[in-house]
Length: 408
Image (cartoon, rainbow, N blue to C red):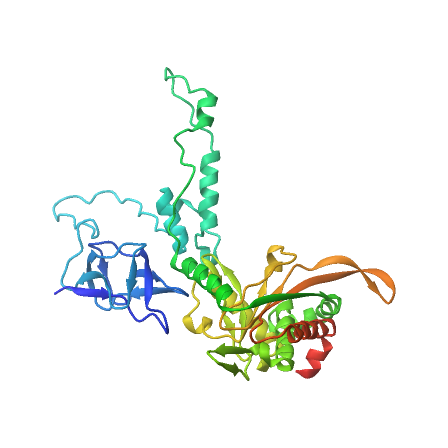
């Protein structure tokens, strides 16, 4: 009797998914625990493993199809034998063995987006070197491979062949498609929906300020070597901003609250979301109880969560909750932007590129490393005065970081 492969529980509040890549073909033998197919959810990708051994009898839902919990994805035949295409033939006893042949090169690990892109473009993944974690092939690797293929000179025409078409004809390409229609991934659809909802559901405003980063940069330079030797990780800027945000949230608790119908929920804990640009879209993993962590612990958690985001291995637990969010567009070169709230949170701090600029210090013009910062907030709960004072408090703590060290 065939054993169905069903969509498992996907996590709290997640009821639908999109079928990603199948890792097994019909007729192929499977063992208990083998990954059969990937499912893309709103937040993370879920691998569906085999719960019984046998042969993959059928694939009932194709990549790109939306499915719900309990839906049947395919069937496994526990008593089935691998098809001839999947199982190597056994040579006859009296016949001489054929000469050994090179085993086919296994397909390298690739992200779901890269696999879909390779399939659409007809690219053999074994020909593409991967630059992602563990040698994974990314969509950027596929794009580079395609551009290199297009740049390769055409093979020389054999003797007596017809003359090549005029260059003008080759350049015109009247039959070449000028548009491409690609279905949005489930995560991108969710991001689009939630960003739109955030603008419709909140009275969002943004206030700006600038921070002189001289003191933090000097402190890092003085202590970086000893910090690395002691903690095994570099002291970055994000741990300072996390500490500064926690200090400002303690002073202005409205920014650490949320609205639920006609009530305000004040939160006496500080779970800080860190926006990370992953391959399939922005994700916001959360640093729990950031007020209780040291600078080193914060840096280690940021590094771990960023690695998991790049490897597409974040869990739902990594993304759940969060009382306030920090997003850093400066790593991409952004000088100034307006961050969008991450509901139900009522505040988000946007960081930007550090740029040397002339400033007046003690009546004299000097060149200092400056950063613009932006605080977007929900005006239904946070007044402009509290928003401005919150951002000023972040500025004060960053410009005098010893305050954070003395406060623990």
